[in-house]
Amino acid sequence: MRVLETTKLSFAYDDGTTALRDLTMTLDDGEKVAILGPNGAGKSTLLHLLSGFRMPFDGTVAVCGRKLEQQSADDIRRDLGLLFQDPDDQLFMPTVEEDVAFGPRTLKLDDIEGRVLRGLRSTGIEHLAKRRPHRLSHGMKKRAAIAGILAMDPRVLLLDEPTSGLDPKSRSELVRLLKSMDRTMLIATHDLEAAAEIVDRAIVLNVGVVKEGTIRDIVTDSKVMEEVGLELPAISRLFKELDSMGYPVEALPVSMDQAVAELTKVIDRVGRQARSRGVTKTAGQKKKT
Image (cartoon, rainbow, N blue to C red; front, side, top):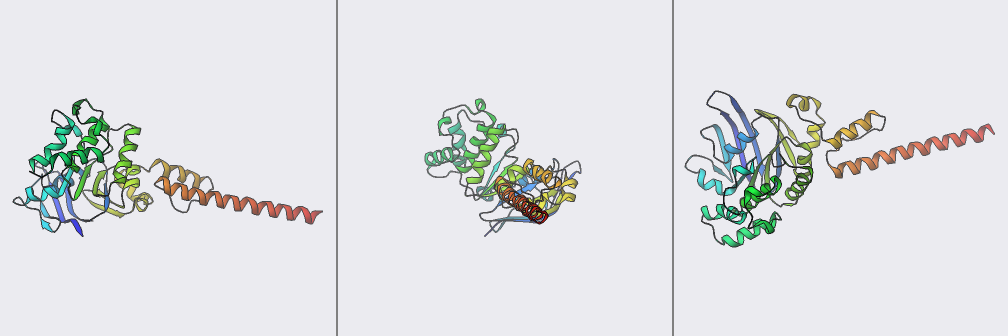
């Protein structure tokens, strides 16, 4: 089922700056899709438009088959959970559990206590329920904000730069958390390494759509990477270097699983070549004797 669809979506700010132009894209139920692009590409603006927080705009947005309009925005937002880039913009209650409960209470949903507990458990922060949100680490703040979204049980998670500002350990933990979630997601990010671990496909955005495909499709398109200023994941750079050193790489890996598979092929090829050289050398020595 198609849960999100935009058709020729365009938006400009009051000063005339164009943020999006003729953007057409889709998101199906169960998909995890990344919106990639540099700062100023329109990623955050797109999420705000999808959520109905910015209006008016040219073109159309449909959520679960319903056209997003001013009069339908409040109802449609029940199907969407938006994570802001800065969790401090999202957390404001005295305790974490009160923050997680705020959304369900505002929407007048049932079983508030159960929803809060499930949200906290899903993000692994049950032990932080009584803590003050502003005293949490940045990574835990992100988890608390996600818990609040999950407590409302939206159809789609809209995540704005979820890994920004995190230390390596917190970033890895959040990537694993998002990867494990059986949720439909649209993730705006410039973090290709994180996207490679989480999403099924990606859309490169720079005011309009530049390219669409898997993360591997995108990183192997040097023209697109240069045009939008995206940086290769570290693991991709490593294998690109191996290829330049004479160890041919069939397909540039972008995730750890892909890297292990590709490294196995490289080692196998090198082994076969070494054995072949050894056999040739032995045959030459016998002939000489």
